[in-house]
Length: 428
Length: 156
Image 1: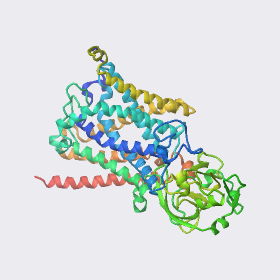
Image 2: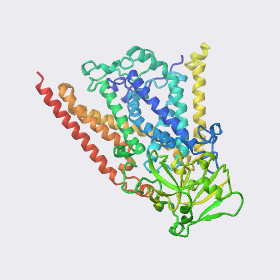
Image 3: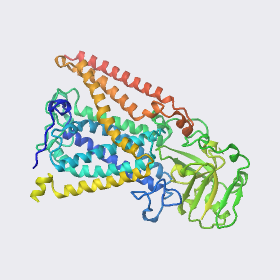
Image 4: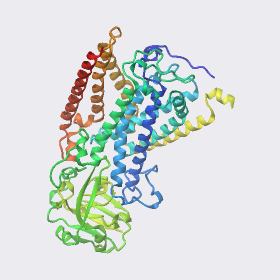
């Protein structure tokens, strides 16, 4: 094997620099085995969210390009409408698992940080490539989680579009993670075989000793450890409790009810009083619709079958048979809220437009800007018994912020596709 | 084969796996660079994330940890009580720091206008809530420490 040079042993490159007796391959392995399932759930539900947007329909695609969940229709089935809480569950899991992963990820990075300064920095070409892939792993992981966490708090300092960056950042992260797991799994299994999966958790402070390194492998175990001030079980319990606590904060926004009070610092952790007091993702003031366009002169335009459009006012819509449905609005930002909606079935409106068996529906909002001003629904969504053009919620008229004069609500449809301030429905 | 291992440092499957991973990563990067109006900003955030953690956040909390340990548990005066005191300081500090890190955008009210226009609510409450949670964490930790001190004092 070729010899690569050592760097001068100064600062963190010095063997004795890293002193914590808790660092080592066993701790790294234990944290990894907690982190991996969380990341897996987060990644899968994230790709599912792209699938739920149905980018193959109309102008739904937020960006173009093939990838998991994007640009194709899995099995040609489209996104289902049952169970109604499907998107609330998948997207809730996405945000909860991602946030719950943060303390474990930070602890894992703390554990292995000495390896960033291993000396000599390169042992072989293979080793150099592995270290390069760690740049992608750590960079991709921190990038994906950070952009997600910042985005759900409604701060957009990126200077690039969030959705494709978060999506392709995740692909980069997953590609590096699969390689990392493949390369490190043998070491992890060996460490668990030698040290036991949980055995080091039994040690009290007097018995907490530095981990031995693994022969022939550069590990994070310290060469000259300080005396311990914390047991491994206390460290693991603290990291676990932080993860559960942060996860519960995020989950409070999904589950709602009294659990909502757990979401103390989460952006959607506040409940108001009154039938229209549930959360919104965009206020009326934010979208720039002139006030008179949603007044008494508002008419819903129904198109389809090539005939001239049918126009209906709110009074006419309220005169039609009304359907009641208790359905969640589930936001991509990981909060959801279940309310009792009243309105006209979309299928009923399709028949008025002269389309008996609609394949798709394009919903056009009065909002002048934004990618989501036009949304296309699939056949199953238009024809579902509980797919409504909602006029009322919880027994009162919709408020302006919730989409007055009329909004779409469809079971399991992502919240941003439940268009508010509807102006036109185009059936095909 | 032996020559390959000697030159490369691992088997050919290793090289194949690494190159596959790099190819996917390169594809993802090229897509996001295509879609971003300022591709350099994506690169900045990718590298910035590593720098922010490895060279700013980690050294910062590690240094604070070393200072706290040096002040509360000096090598010469190591005792169970002093170690407990250290942990009753650093555990609530780490938890409060973690909450600040994760919910920084709302706690620091980084985008009050966007927050109001999106949710219809004021973002200002989060700083108060974080301060409250932090105060509760430190108080609870101090009370638990007081109980431990009493128990230690009663032990022979």
